[in-house]
Each structure stands twice: as C-alpha cells, then as structure tokens.
Image (cartoon, rainbow, N blue to C red; front, side):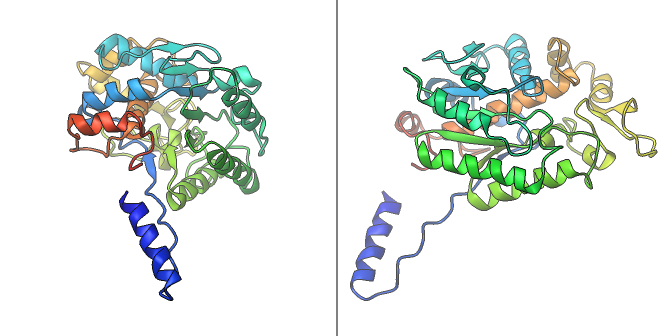
Length: 318
C-alpha cells in the first residue's frame, strides 16, 4: 500500500508539471550462503509457515541431490519442524517439495553452454494440469565450470524471462559446485557473474558453491585452497587438492560429539561429497524457505497476525 500510494503521488506530481516519477527501487537480493546455515536462529514458526504456504519444484541431477539427502538426514535427526512431505518425481499437487519436478518435463539440470532445455521443461511443468508450484529451483551439475560468460548470460536472461512470465512464482538462482580450480578458475568467475547479477537485480540466490567453501565454523575460505565438490582442499601447497585433506572429515573428527557430526553420520550417501556437506546444504535450504515465506532474517519473528497475512503473500513485502 505504501509503494502504491507513493506511485500515485508521483504520477499526480508529474501530471501537474512536477518532476518525473522515479523508477521503482530494486528490492534487496536474498542471498543464502555459508552464513545462512545456523538453524538455531530461524524461528520454528517460519519453518512451519514455509511448509504450509510454499510448493517447491526442485530439479537436478546428482550434485543437486545433496540438498534432498541432507533434508532427509535433518528430519531423521531433528524431527519437527524439519519434517517435510517430499515426492520423488514430477508434479504431486499439495506436497511441500516435489523433488525431480522439472526432470519430468524433459530436462536433467541447468545444462552446459547456455542450453535452455531446463527452461522449456519449466514452462511445460508450470503449465501442467493441477500445477501448484510457487517456488522453482534448478541445480547445476558441471555446467558452470564449462560455461562461458555468454552461456551464463543466457541462463540469467532465461531466468529473468521466466520471472516476468510467471510473477506468482519465485525462481531461485544458484551457483555451480566447486571443482578445485580456486579463485582464479573459470568456475569462480562464472559464479561471481551469477552473484553480481543477483545482487544488482534483487534476485534470490542459493549459493551452492559458497556453502561448500566453508566448514561450520566459517573461519577458513577453502575456495582459496582449491577446494573441490568433495570437500578436499590443497593442504600442502602443491597446487593439487585431489586426495589431500578434507575439511568436512577434519571438522567431524574434531567435533565428534556435536549434533552436526551426529546428523552427518546418519546422512547416508552424499553424492560426490562428504555427508556434512549435504547437511549444510539442507540447513541453508530451510533458511531459504523461511526467507521466501516472509521471514526477514535473524532476530525477527513477526506476530501471529502477520503470519496469517503472509499466507497469501509469497513475495516478501507484497
């Protein structure tokens, strides 16, 4: 209402010979990265609210499955509110998370070199009878490592077009997983391209690469040490992280009695990586869900009335 009133006032001022209306301000981006994995600061009420109002279509191949694997581990270890209804293929209306949703539309993941098969699959699935998805998220496999700046620009442009075509749906941007090439590698440069676009244009970003660049203490940036998607890093300075130390294994060994270590132990197989990485991705996912449901961030829990109002308002501030 405030924004609408300001818009009307500006239009009237323009009609009366005043200054031209100012363009609408770009909303702040929602960036979910390694700093967004402490679920102790996310009010349980917002997790429950997210499960009630969000209907997520998540699509991916093996690397993207890390999120879903971690979600199962969190549910098993922590229980409510981190229990969630999840289906395993295509559209299942009424269910919080449709895993492999867009895959049923004919694409595997975000692809390589700017191919847009995922976009076409998204359009097909959003047009499916009974579709109720209001959050769409695709994951990369190795596509960012192999992409060019123009290829990433194609991805960003396609996401922007989808947002314009489906204004009631939140589209989650995502970075590509680490590949051992470090801060000077093409992967990091392309991930930075995605981050810069999201920050400049008020997008929602799940920073997959940043989450796996830090252990739970967050004090060491393992990207600088050529970290890989498997959490290995160059500990001896020889420029080769493969088969070297593993930050996730080191952290678990140093904190054997921690809740995180227990959760990782019950995680099962984490594709291409250490179970702790899957758990951290899942923790960040719940943070993302709370933000999309209307939570403004740490230290803020709105009154019940605001929660009821936001049940009908997917977009924060809507």
